[in-house]
Image (cartoon, rainbow, N blue to C red; front, top):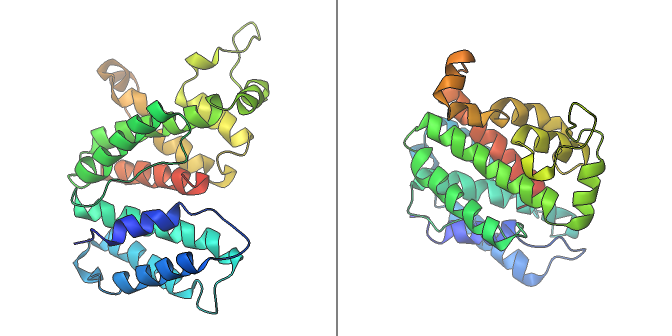
Length: 244
């Protein structure tokens, strides 16, 4: 049902931010608005419906007085959100989301594969534990690419005041950093939004603990639909903030 809408929204979410808005971009934005006008919002689950209605209203306002370069960041953010909302609801019939912002090609393939499984299979079926684990794994892959691929950023990560240290004060080798440490350093470097750090931290920092039964017995974590939605929201917030 959304075969044409989601790829178009994905394309607009990936456009570069420029001082001027090309005729092609304004045309595609107009097409997206026209396609979305045909969406039956009432058929969506209430949680998705509310967010979808909010994003549709925001989209109507963007470019309403003529397109300018300052409108592009908002258009990108809204388009990405709409694509994710529609993709989640389709449960697998929509086009696969790509992550062109991930520099490491091998890691990009893994992230795209896992994200596809998360939004098409796990979240729609309310597979709580599996959803949280995979969302955490995807976030770890995203931050690994952001911190490790570019050598200048890697050097800044190692020099960060929040980089993990051993008992003797030495730097923990980066290949041994866990997600919690990556979140700390990425926030310190401005890769993650400090205003969202607590959401990401609480929802996904210790996702690996859900894998090990012995750890769960010693440290019982809540694991229910609320936790799953929080993990999904945290991952979505990171993806949007990093414009992947």
